[in-house]
Amino acid sequence: MKWLSHLFGGHEMAALNVGDPAPDFALNTLDGKKFSLQEALERGPVVAAFFKVSCPTCQYTFPFLERLHKAYGNRNVTLIGISQNDRKDTATFVKEYGVTFPIVLDDIRTYPVSNA
Image (tube, rainbow, N blue to C red; front, side, top):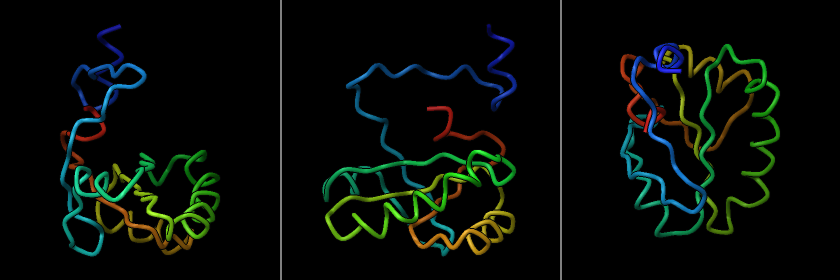
């Protein structure tokens, strides 16, 4: 199954077990601000949605995620989108799907957060 990992960033992905904390990360948001998972977790639960703009499931899901953000965003629940695309394509996706929650950009060459 090693060959499969090369389809997704070229690195073997570490497996997290249920209940394991997610590894900390800090990435830039689409609007240039720094987002830290650890800082967000200090405020409350975090829902991370990994996506590619060409993914039909992501396109279908993001309007629902936006509704969750509007319903629970003021209750110390952070919803964050983690894009595996470049800034330009991600900005187009955000505009097209009316996303108002923070979007961070994973490095499109190595995907350090997606592969964590």
